[in-house]
Image (cartoon, rainbow, N blue to C red):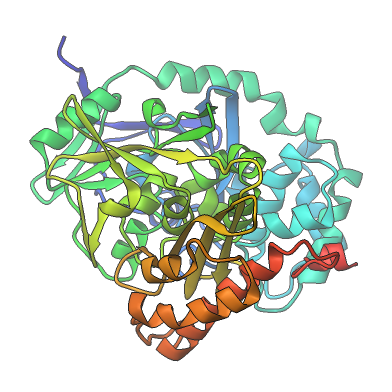
Length: 492
C-alpha cells in the first residue's frame, strides 16, 4: 500500500494549531517565531545551542504520554516539529491573568538583571518545575547547565528556583490542567502520512515510519539526515551550508526504542541523551555521569545517540566508551541490515562505513560484567556544557591472580576518528595490574596517537592528559577510601 503524502507541517503553537506549507528545510524555529509570528520573547544569543536565551518547550507524544522538554530554538528546525506542541514564554500565565509562578519568583528574588537571558532561564525552570516541584540544588543546576547569564545572577536565580512552588502548584499549571486536551489534539494530528515540502534545493521530507525512511533514503541517498540537529543546526547558523534535501527522523517511534536484555543495552538511533540516561546510568553509571556533561539540558533533549555516532566526529562523546565496551552497530539500507563492530564504522576523518542510502538504526552496548572495571573521563576547558578536548574510556577485566585478563581502551580527540589504544592495551595485557605496569605502558601512547593542536588543546596537553587518564583509572581501581573526585554538592 502506497504511503500517503501531505504537503504541510502541522503542530500546536501555544494555544493554536498551526499549518505551515511554505517552509525552507533550514528554517530555524527561532527565526520563524520572531520573524513570522512576531513572538520575540525568545532571544538569539549564540545561534549554536550554547547560551539558552532562545529556550522554548516542545511537547511530544511518547509511549509514556505527553512530555515537555526545553530545547534550543536557534538550532531546532521547523521541519522537525510535525505533531509537536511548541510553548514559548508568551504562553506562560498564572491565575486570573497574573504572572506565572516562575516569573513571580524571578522578580521577587531579583533573578533578572539586563533581562536578555531571562526568558530562557524562565523556560528552563518551567520545564524543571513541571517534572519536579521541589528540586534539589543539584537538579536546579543541572536544569540550568544550558543557560548562561552574563550578568552573573546565578545565586539569585537559584533562590528563585527554590521558591517557585511558594507561588503556585505545578498540578494547577495550565499545561498540567490542559494535558489531556493537548494530548488528544496531538494524537489527532497523526495521520501516518509522509510530509514533503518544496523542491530542488529547498526540499524537506518527514518520513511516515522507519520503513518509509528506508524507502526515502534509497531514492535520496545524498539527503541530509537530521535527528536532533545539535550538529546540523550549526552547519546552517555558523557555516551557512546547504543541507537540502533534508530528511527529519526525530519523530520516528521505530528508532526510539531502548531496552536491556541478557546484559546488552539496545538503543535506537533516534533515542536522545535524556531518554537514554535512566537505563544507561542504571546499568553503566560512568556513562550516566558522562551524559550529564554533554551540552546542556536543551542539547541533551534534542541530541541523539545515533546522531552522535553517525556524525563521525573525532570528539563525539559516546563512541569512545561504547567502543571500550565492545559495542556493535546496526546499519540498514532498504530492508537489508548488517551488524558491524562500532570501532570499524570510523574509517577516516569525515568518512564512515556507511553506504549511500544506508542509515544507523541502533547500537548494541554490552554491560560490564560483575567485577569488571569501567570508566569514562571527559577533558574540557570548563566542566559543564563544553566540547571535548580529549575523552578516554577504559574497560578492564582482571584474572584471579591480579593480572590484566582483558582491556579495551578508546579515546576521542586524540586522532582523526574515535580510536582504540591498541599498543597501550598490548603493553598491559597479561601483566600484573600494578603501578609499575601502568607506568611502563605509558610509552606506548606515542605508537597509538599523534594528536593535533587546536583551539581546545595543544598536542602536548592532549598526550599528557591521555596518559594521566590511565593513571587515574588505575588509581580508581585500587579501592581507596577517599574518592578521586567529588562534586561540590558531595563536598558540601
